[in-house]
Length: 217
Image (cartoon, rainbow, N blue to C red; front, side):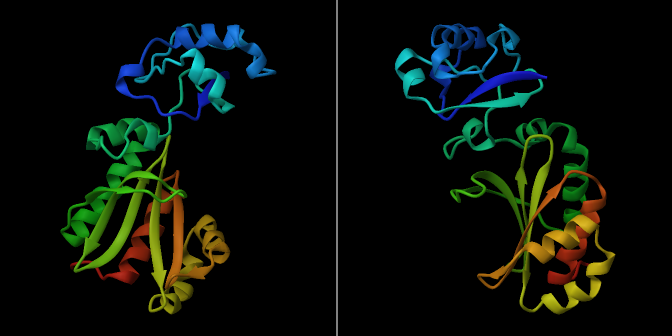
């Protein structure tokens, strides 16, 4: 496993250069990041973004260490800020190995409800960045947030849906059952932020959506 440095600074297109520049500065300012073995840092990063960290930024940056599979990690909202809307292909590439599950869920929702998603930017600190929202007849179906290797599906269980959801809760995966129990009722419902890392969770999301809005037959 390789260790790379994640800097809490937002790089723009003019600041993108080879990762070797960062590795060189890490060696020069090694006292800023104790316990980092720079010999494990690759001389180049094959990822899309290669931030150039100038001396002034390096001294001001807040540094943390993240274990990743050989490439520099940038958060979703840093790769695509409010002024740079991602394409659907960008989303698929970012999700990576979770893309087949993502595409299957989108297809199922669109076929069942005859709707198309709307790209939206969230400034919420809990889950910032671009996401996809599905609505039907003015009612929210779900919101989908791209993540590294998977995605999050937000489904709100409102006061009107609680009784039916709890009647069917035993048919859901243990993960969603536990998440439901841990999620407090606030702002008119239980806001379930469901991490979708395997196909079984798709059925739970579709069932929750169907309780909110019945699909077309």
